[in-house]
Length: 498
Figure: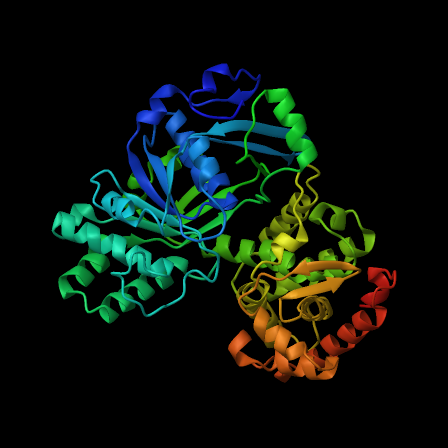
């Protein structure tokens, strides 16, 4: 039995929360760009929870922007999917199982662009949410009359222009736009790109004024580990227990936070915030962003290749490894916390770091390091480089854990022209917009040449990292040790002699 609206009546599982029939009649209030598990496991989770409480009373239409994958499962399951969250809080096991009914339908940008523009003209629409990865919010000079435009900012501008024309530029027709991509000032950056693109397309000044004055672009931050679908073994066990098949099933930790920068008007439109105090709307969310970006994402990013060269496939497996635990603990407490480029009380940062490491230990989440490595170079630039540069502003010593993480990253990016590499006998594909550059750099080059080229590349890092005293030498030393180990069984402690 497949999960669907028709089959809901046949699903009777103790502890499983099911949607009431009235939810399916709610109007669409949210247009969401992205079908990924993070959006489905966090913003859509909160919207679903609010709908169950009769607070928000609105559903989500999702736009699938990429050509990869298929939306067939969403169609077959009427947008329904199971969220299974499990973790440890205050020493006790906690869990939650819900059938999420936030999504009304999934539309393809390539095939359903006319329907998407029709939705832009709906008086019920209030909110646009996105997560197009950190490379999605980039300026692309393009004609927004394409069906569809190529970039996310182009698609968003086309939607806003359609709405402007439909409602004659009325103040009430403006939208709340919330990007969740993990970049600094994501709302401000997206707005700037959209305005520049409007001018490039020579759109009327009145429309540009409408964007600036009647639409609100909110900086936001999402924080929840949602690795995706559970293992085949767990899926089989859960399907046997529940009696239905769910091809959209996702697993997540219980911890979650959605911090949104906004005022009382924003809070009134985003009424789903009333359903859960983990949706935080404040005039300034910088402290949430810095803690999450540096301590959770930064430690993940710097540890990713370290785990992979050590033969550790998942975060939990790595956290059970004594040498890796020593590395990531030293990284977080000794190097990241003192280098956060924002004034944070030390005890607040230490408490957050402790919670992060506890979350990484969650025995119920299978989070693979290879999935974390997606767009690795961009993640290094956004999450790590500000820490590294700030470390050197306040210290004269080399951050040895950061250097080792960087060396492991460079080794991970030793790939061929097909963007494939090999570590410990295991082959992998690199999904990174800079993969071609690294394949070229590694071709017929030794470690000295590679380190010099990569660290000095201002196009990658917006800085010449060879100018940081001792950093290049430490990275090179670590990289040579990693390369010399080759495919031999060697412990992380032997590789990283801090």
